[in-house]
Amino acid sequence: MVGFLYLAAVFLSLAAGFGLRVTGYGLRVTGFGLRVTGCELRVASYGFRVACYGLRVTGCVFLVRGLE
Image (cartoon, rainbow, N blue to C red; front, side, top):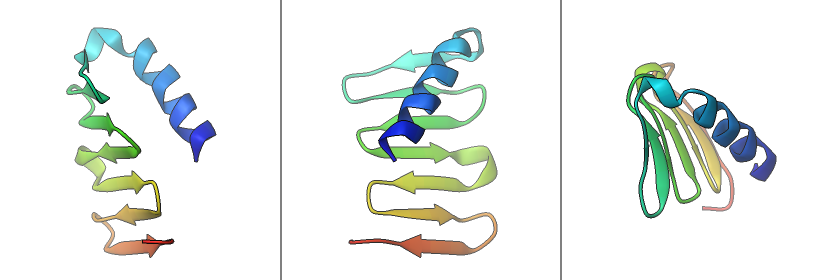
C-alpha cells in the first residue's frame, strides 16, 4: 500500500500542470479528480478509492475491506 501511494505521489508530481494542489495532509489533482489525503487515495472520476484498510470501487459497486 505504501509503495502504491508513493507511485501515485510520483505520478501526481508529474501531473502538476493539470491542477496539482498540496495541502497540509494530502495532495489533490483536480484535473483528474484524484485526491490523496492522509492514508487515502480517491479517483473521483472513476469512482475508485483506496484507503488504509481497504479498497472501494464505487463506480463498479465493488468493495473490499480489510481491518476496518
